[in-house]
Length: 144
View 1 (cartoon, rainbow, N blue to C red):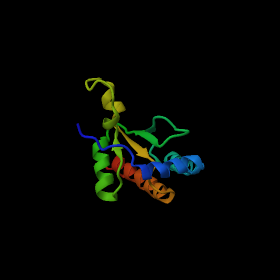
View 2: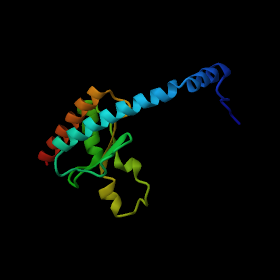
View 3: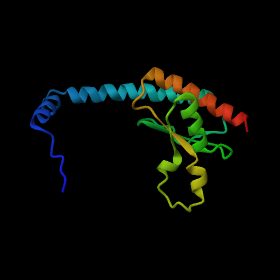
């Protein structure tokens, strides 16, 4: 058996103090406010600029992710390659999040999408990336 052990006593002491004096709770509150602003900016840009052929499957009120369903004439893995190679944007395709039967007929349509996340980028990066994302989708749709 391999064990990395538990948190060492020094680190455990730091964590204990942070929890006791409320710093962690304050940090969580700050992160929630920040992520809410990032999500609102992302959703506003998507609503204004995302081509109508695409669909936001669920408009989140909390959380870190937005799932965009692509039209059948765009394949998510191809879109992701363009975003990564031409714009240095990293997003994940819906195939990664499909939990159903791989032979399910719904898989082709439901899993042909892209998941966007707001947790790590800064607000200005979210805004810039959202514009790039939408314009890239438009370009790919019009090139078909």
